[in-house]
Image 1 (spheres, one colour):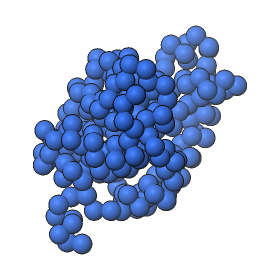
Image 2 (cartoon, rainbow, N blue to C red; image 1 turned 60 degrees about the vertical axis):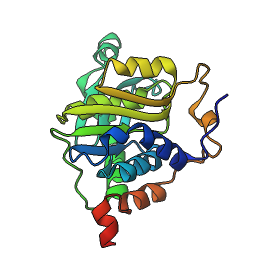
Image 3 (tube, rainbow, N blue to C red; image 1 turned 90 degrees about the vertical axis):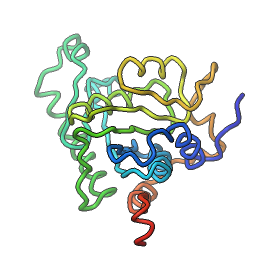
Amino acid sequence: METQFRNRHDAGKFLAGKLKHLANDPDVIVLGLPRGGMPVAYEIARKLNAPLDIFIVRKLGVPIYEELAMGAIASGGVRVLNEEVVRKLGITPRMIDAVASEQECELERREHEYRGDREPLDVTGRTVILADDGLATGASMRAAVQALRKRNPARIIVAVPVGAAETCEQFEKEVDEVVCGRRPEHFGAVGEWYQDFTQTTDEEVSELLDRPVLAHEHKNN
C-alpha cells in the first residue's frame, strides 16, 4: 500500500503540486466540496494563489428509498435531476419539489453558516477546480459537476488526492481535466488513505473560508 496522507491538509499540499501548471492564473477559482474537501481546497488555493470558495451539493433522495438519488441541488439555486430514475419510478414534480424544498433549507443553512454575508464567487468563463478529499463512487462530485456546468465556467477540473481508478477514468469523459493524485489498484474507502480522517467540522470550514489565500491578502493581513 502507498504511504498514507497525514491529514487532509497534507493531501491538499500534495495535490497542489500536481496542479502547479495553474499557479497565478487569474482565471482559476478553487471550490471545495464540504466538508472534507475544504482543507484540500484551501491548500490548493494557497499554493496556486487562486480565490477559494465552497460549493455545496445536497442529494435529493427518492422518498422511502432516500439512499437512491433522484437528483441534487447545489449552491446558487441549481437543481439537477436524474431523469432515468424519475421516469422509472414515476416520481411526480410535486414529490420532487417537496424533497428539494427540504434540502434547500439545509443548503441555505450551511451557506449562511459557512459563508456569512459573502456572495458566492462568479464562475462564469473561469477555470474551476472542484476539490474533494477523495473519489469513491463519485456521486457527490458528479452532482457538483452537473450543477456547476449550469453556471457556465470555461473549464471544469476535478481534483482529488486519491480516487478509485475506475471512477477517475469515468470523470475524464465528463470534465476538461481530472487530477487524481493517486489511483491505487485496490482502493477500498477514502479514509483508508489518511492517517487522520477525523470529520471536518462546520467551524473548521468557516475558519478556512475566512483565512487569506491570495498573495496580496497575506501582505495586507
